[in-house]
Length: 179
Image (cartoon, rainbow, N blue to C red; front, side, top):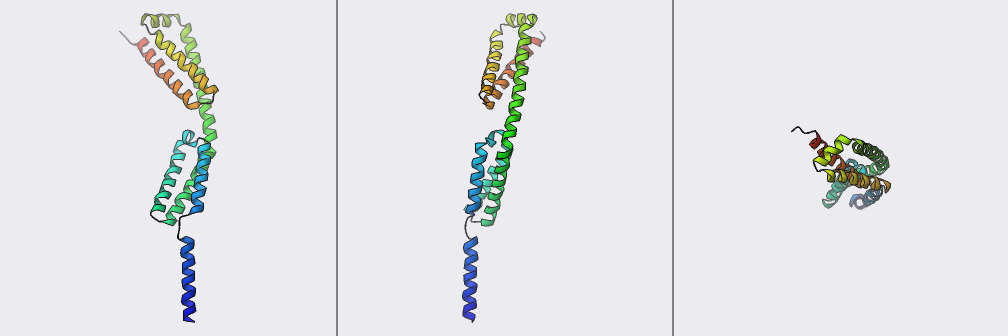
């Protein structure tokens, strides 16, 4: 009887160890699948903070697996999967918001360039200061932004508009500087 109890307890202990004694493969796979979905939604670009938090959880899971801390790994991978899912869901709205913002910035830049071209006094000052190249550079940046937006390349559009803003600010500062 005692032998049966010892064997039964040993068998039960082995089953518990085998069931809990390895990496949380299912959670790892879920986290990897959620990361793939987030990558497909360009979450790293549009909801960077959420994506980075998910990546940190994934890294914590990998570290816990290496240390054979299975419970910690399971929690980290579950957190990563949840965070990647949230990032994948938030990315399209963030992308649309960025596109709307860039479209508005582009319209404002085009209006500003049109107004500047009509301002004869300002254009005379630009010519006098020999800064026509800067005006052309601004116009080229706006054209590049317009083209990038048409292709849905939001990052290129943002870079072009940022360049336009920087050149325009420098040009405006030169025009308004006191001598």
